[in-house]
Image (cartoon, rainbow, N blue to C red; front, side, top):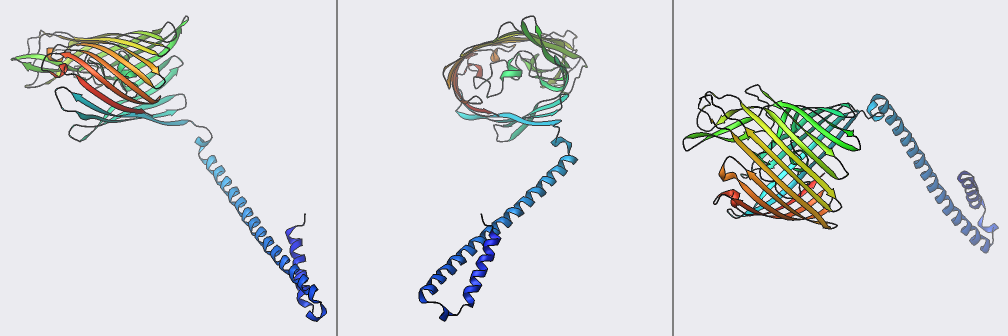
Length: 419
């Protein structure tokens, strides 16, 4: 194949010869033929010039690429993390929007929540995990809370040390099920929220992990944390315990710690059974009318059991939690009697179509206050757009004290997305 430079030289020579010959030396037909050849040579020359320009641009692009490669190589020498990924950053979380229509109130869009979860891991040594809870309040204001924040130090294949504020390991619902895109219903079972029977979170130290047990598997969590604080109110001139503030506080007014944990066993694939406990001291720190006088630390004890069974399209689970606060007979201006909160639920979910599942849940919550006692049947249907996108519609049949919120039936809807 002729190179562009050889063709270019021959084309220029032909043009020069044609220009030097006198017109009288050529016949008419020869002149026309020569003109055609000159025009053809001119077209060929233009094409060659275009080809040369393209080759020059290509050569410049190669130079740019080589320069960029050199720059990346220099950066990789300076910043070692490009070669060895010692630090890993991961963003996860979930968001949900809900609608509620109670018998006693008008329907309203009752929930707008965004919960980003941040993970920062250094090698296989330590990980920081934290979740924010950002919600839209009824008055339109925005509330931001720290759901949990822990430093997880990996001790070995069977144990991790967790330090900070962590979700309570008592039972399964709080630590594993409560996010909107995981919970099968738009609401939590009665007794698993604020001032309920189940603790929400703790601040302290925790060791958790798992190990084989013969042919079975097991998991465990043991922790020590600040003790919870108690709320008291006056009813009919008497002081009574109102609720337990078990939300991972950094204060501990009586200095007494709580120890607890959970042990789970997986005897066969798809089935887990577990027992939970916590014991320690608690004291009244919140009083609605006057300061606390003569209050002593009270016994604080929690007991729980839970199970979960997954078989084909059936998801069956249940949980029981009881929290008991002891009495105080010191003679001060306090609630002398103790109090007990207990709740249990059983829930079944069945996927009868690839993207559609039905849910039924029964809950029985018993509180020291009759107005809060509640028995509830919840029926729901879910549509799963994907494994992490769920739309829910549910109806709750509530049986409580007449005229109280616990007795109002409800229609609930929710759209939740986990990422």
